[in-house]
Length: 248
Image (cartoon, rainbow, N blue to C red; front, side):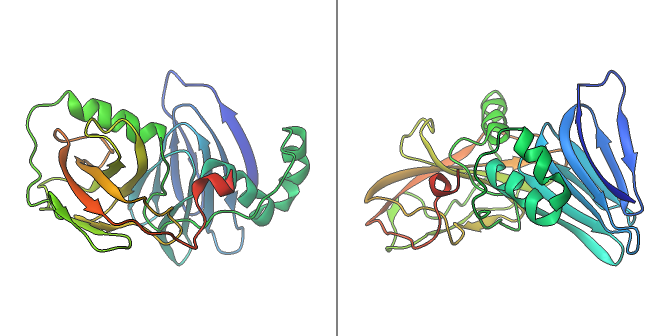
């Protein structure tokens, strides 16, 4: 029970933390772990690296930088994702004892955290998702079909994307770009199902043509095939939500 903040160099052998809520597997990372001594609920905030968490019921999730996980007690596994700067802000709200530590890290302003998404958050250039895209391009063939919208116009407002599910895929990496080579990423996310709508708070799009790609991922977050890609045209729209730039 209790709370600690750790920054671990990459380990030669796997290293894990066991709590009343479950197990946290670590190779090299920076994270904060809190365990409620009365309920056994475990909270994990991941700042750098990649870890796996397994709750007492055997449910396993891979966490990436910016992720917040809660599990154990009577709770099921829940993983939220924040822009990394907002995750450090969340520390002040959830674990105020670390406020002085954050001050020593030269964190000079504490903005309101950006709203999380229930399935991975969004970012223009999320490093983990850009690595997935690079690895997927080295594979042969794409198993994803029936992309919608495909080479068509959509109404104003956030479009809804869908595609045929891939056998063996436990999640998908989604990318939205202004160029056909998918280099200028305007939005990226990791989603659980074979459909996706841009969440409230995502920045609106200007009028024009956009290209979107999706990559099926296995249980470890590794790509199963090349990206499937299509495009759509939008009249554009604005959103009253918070864009990523406003939170950093």
